[in-house]
Length: 251
Ligand SMILES: [Ca+2]
Ligand SMILES: [Ca+2]
Ligand SMILES: [Ca+2]
Image 1: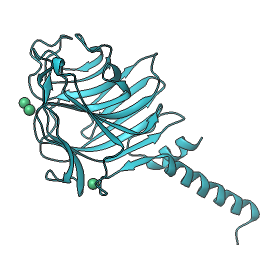
Image 2 (image 1 turned 135 degrees about the vertical axis):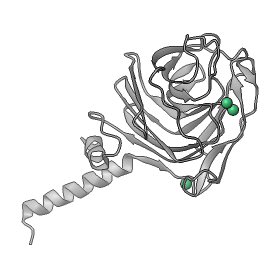
Image 3 (image 1 turned 45 degrees about the vertical axis):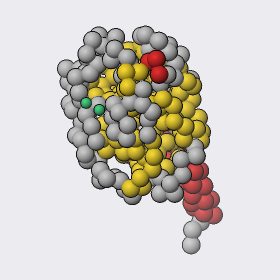
């Protein structure tokens, strides 16, 4: 028999566990429902290929799990190709301030892809983005592809983004046509984006406040699945430490 104290402890643990899990948003697209997602293509004057984007839910053709999000157009920009612009898919179900976002990804091309957060509009958000190809050639921020960057959107015209951090010389191309995984941790203006192969980039911005999260693509056709967004109220957790995440979320 459990002591009275033990029973209370077990109940408390159970409630805390359930509360922690309940805070996480988990999106696997098996219901083929995109009603919480908004497609936002960059303004036509910002683009070299005006699209439109083609976001849909399909059966994975690149090794992910069942139904997945897929974008199939080659929409890209800017017009002189000096900045990675294209299309956003924004999750409108909830806004997040401090959080951990995990995503399975599979790329069909070698171009730009990444996550956005604190999204308010095309001219107000942050992004972590990477590209294997040599574009942009003559980049507005001085770093042509291939690279991984964290940047802050500041305008709807040149220079579009303020560069916060770049991985250039140490960049490793992502694999095409197979399962990749991204983890983004955002806490109090500290941003860390990590790939499944360990390649990571971090940046910081004191003026950060929360907003919507989503995906950004430049000339890239890619699948996305198992998007998990978990609010954090304490110190960031390691990407694959679910138990620690749960405890961290309910403190
Ligand atoms: Ca799925
Ligand atoms: Ca390309
Ligand atoms: Ca392409």
